[in-house]
Amino acid sequence: MSVSENQGFNTRAVHAGQAFEPRTGAVVPPLHFSSTYAQDGIGGLRDGYEYGRGGNPTRDALQEQLAAVEGGTHAFSFSSGLAAEDSLIRALMRPGDHIVLGNDAYGGTYRLINGVLGEWGIGNTPVDMSNLDAVSEAVAANKTSFVWVETPSNPLMKITDIQALAKLAHDAGALLVVDNTFASPYLQTPLALGADVVVHSTTKYIGGHSDVVGGAIVVKDAELAGKIGFVQFAVGAVSGPMDAFLTTRGLKTLGVRMDRHSDNAQAVAEWLLERPEVEAVLYPGLPNHPGHELAKKQMKKFGGMISVQFKGGEAAARKVAEATSVFTLAESLGGIESLMNYPSEMTHASVKGTELAVPVNLIRLSCGIEDVGDLIADLDHAFTFIQ
Ligand SMILES: *Cc1c(COP(=O)(O)O)cnc(C)c1O
View 1: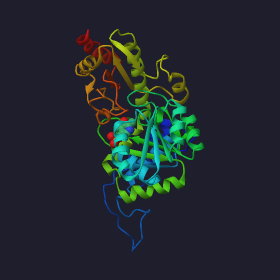
View 2: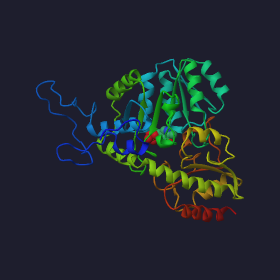
View 3: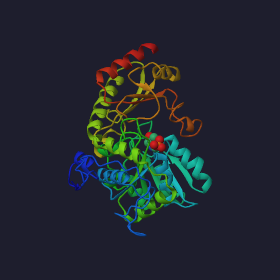
View 4: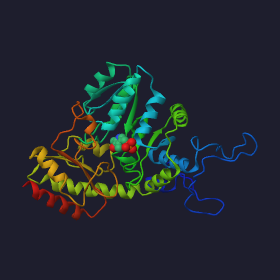
């Protein structure tokens, strides 16, 4: 079946780009590994397919599905989230242009923008994105073409008003790019709130099973899509067929997983809040979170990510990070299994010593879809080491 934008999220996630195979009726579209396609005479392409970097039916199916769930018109799938970000910047920016981004942006995003693209003439200013006056000032002070935001942010879980930021960016002639990795399109659709571009690390919630690395760009404008499609083809950091297939399979169940991730995280956050060892729980689902009301407005639920700061400082954070067993100590997030991360030495080690550095008494939890009682029992046991 083909899907319409009036259908619900889960219907679109399951069916967009996933029509059964006409010859056999195979309900799951076949995985196409071929790198090249036979031509019916020179230039006689079947359905436009010529060569695997330019087009592959398995990747196209994923791209159609991604566009449908984000409410975009075009989506582009890449070999990683950072490959997607690199292609996006090179497609739409030129030397001398400037990016204003969150001062707690994902470390790898900052490393790409500052450490790689900085050498090619792309400037950047990190600011607190939840402070719109500060953003406005930074945008006006430079030839800003991108305002780049993560909301919720990683790992400080700050919430930014997408609608207000879109207006601010547009008034200054800039585009708003939202990294929607943490929320996922099930919880938040930035294009509907005025954003121009959504980027994803599909490695996280969209893939959802910690078994594939990938990235995506989604837009709602044909001119932007033309420029991004050209760089995707000309640079070639595309997802391979197996990666695209696994990502599609994950995306079909995104809605049911996000409901469980969010419910588990809410219960874990409420438990943490009562613990004497804890200095702060950063979770937008808690009424005391400064972004709670805003998150309620622009998100369907509050997601599966929690950051926790300990009164016992760095030592306590490190002890708890190394003492859990249901939560596995590992980088990444968004899989069905719970993960524990010590950002200042792990995911955010690349921003240590910069203004993007993460507090050393902080751990980040990616709450999986296990039984929530087991998650809490695991943390309860780990806390005995810091009492
Ligand atoms: C992981 C991540 C990225 C980078 O994606 P990769 O797939 O690892 O290249 C970008 N943004 C956020 C928020 C992430 O969590």
